[in-house]
Image (tube, rainbow, N blue to C red; front, side, top):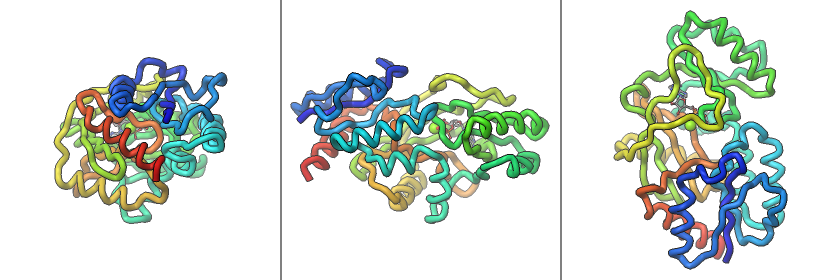
Length: 286
Ligand SMILES: Nc1ncnc2c1ncn2[C@@H]1O[C@H](COP(=O)(O)OP(=O)(O)O)[C@@H](O)[C@H]1O
Ligand SMILES: [Mg+2]
């Protein structure tokens, strides 16, 4: 068995999950190698499966990425599969999950100029971000006095072809941080705390991914239940899933569900890397 771990040229050797994951494959006696999705010289059919890992630049060229996923899926097994990636690579999936009863961060979807007046209705701090996004790129936090600036930011994103998400800034993140609960093969493995990322004043990061303050976290019972409700509502299969939660007034709210290329924080969680290898092997044999 041979497995390709898909990263990106732009992320080359920056994915801290790859060394522990490669070690886990070696422990299981399985050949695995990291390759960039955007390296045109790779023959993906050589592999029994292509496991998406740090394809972090998909958000800036989603169509090309989905085309590539489609080609890989014709040649071999893609994990997570194309249908899952297509659905999950645009944050409008939040609306689907809300319709299935998941408690999400309250979100207005700005699809065109006509929806822009919703920005001026905000009474507290708020966030604008593209519906196709990762690594906090183009996510920005504003206060109500900055409606004009926010309007310009939203127009810029619309002009680039994105739908724009408008959310209240959930300020409990400043204290509690964000909780990311990792699930592999449908089972919880571990959680981390991510510190707050958006500075006051409407500055948006233009980097591929913003620097993050990551620590281990013991998830609360409420966070576990929230994550389980999200996973029970999935419309498509997922071998790995990361559920990112922010504290709301009535309990944890879904900020993001990551089924494409989430960091899974394997450093210090070697068991979780082994679990991913086991789950992948089982899915290929089943
Ligand atoms: N509504 C919000 N309230 C508070 N912080 C937010 C909110 N939306 C985003 N953030 C912050 O911005 C970061 C990036 O936003 P996120 O929705 O996770 O997009 P992505 O990680 O795909 O770029 C989050 O990790 C969080 O720190
Ligand atoms: Mg995020």
